[in-house]
Length: 559
Image: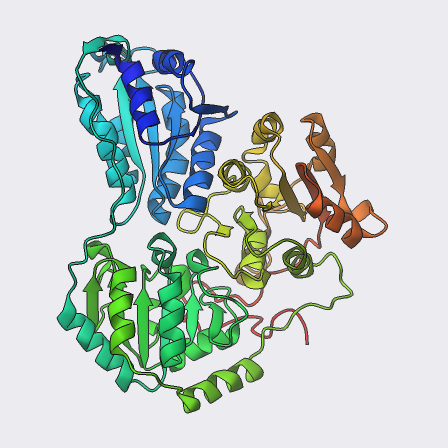
């Protein structure tokens, strides 16, 4: 058979099982779009390339499989960079395929030429620059393998236009990449040592991160915790991987964790760190993190071992397989003394909620949403105060039900990611919490949402500020407010209607909770503008550079 490079690219993506691709066409990738015309793949025309890459993230984060986005050369490619970097820091498998000027024009400052390969070296797990049409047959399946195996991450493929239009004759297709179960080669000696440390410890804690989600290890985490009575503290990225209603669950640790969580971490004599990277937002001052504890670190990425925190035992490999061995080797233990201490700390240092009379308090609204939608609903946030309130208050019970930008903290993440999640989860309710600062970063994707007629519910916490910036200026910069208040804030309900999406301002409703209930249960997209107090803070908060036991507002939101 004889096909062009563009046709080969599309056929290889079809053979990988790709059903949806988000992107924007341009001169340097038009041959690929021409080949896409007769494809079974559904194309989503985003309104900005960053939106396209976050749509891909929404697909990948919600189902664990690599997703694809397209962009043209030059500004198309550079517009992808933030979302690619976001995927790198959170270990999300996306594949960005960019058009490039023809090979003979490389280095001539041709129209819309930029060194996409060079720009993406530090923000991808791997990247490829295609120099011959034959390379497509190996590079595209390999890109999926790299993105999905081991520590997942983004891969970029840059394809010059001349290769897209060149024709090539061949006899058969390469086998598509199929993800296999991870290699079960395990360090049994270290596992034995870790099991012995767990059995000997008096006050162990499981400190779990995003690796628990990507390795599908949540069930084994639960088994280990219940068998040996080990409390569980989660990072932002691990929320949903342990049921929030279980007594052993301590919630999120770190900068905005509950006081009892951080205090119990400080009391631990053994920390079992599973799929974490000891991020500063979780650990606070690393020198003051769990000072009395020995540490076992389990991770699939050797680069994370002893990178930030020197540990006593490290085990490299697939977390799920390692946990299976650990569960067999640890004994059943009720740990009555430690359970008593956990109960006492939860009573002494409770996470106080705001008064239920304050209907529009963000915590109360988030908890209300959690009481209405199902446990398998997918909750997405942008970045800011609303993100932390959601992490604190939403009743997550299942993995892949919370999608948020953790490592890069990208404002504008929420709406396009919600679109991607809704695309591949058509039977699930998808709710995106955003802020008035964040939503303006990618508000143009409301047009994409309207195109697709997905039933995404977008709830905008509107305080007229960059909320977390204002909060830090209040708490740590002597209330010198600079560039954190918006002089002009749009009418988001009116804007949404301009995009053809139903909307309302919850502050103008006579019975806001009844209205919100109806919106959440409706079968269509909806934007809800929610006015909140401009001086409402996320509490508690660990000051920058402090240890996690030094918390301001540790009592929470009321008494």
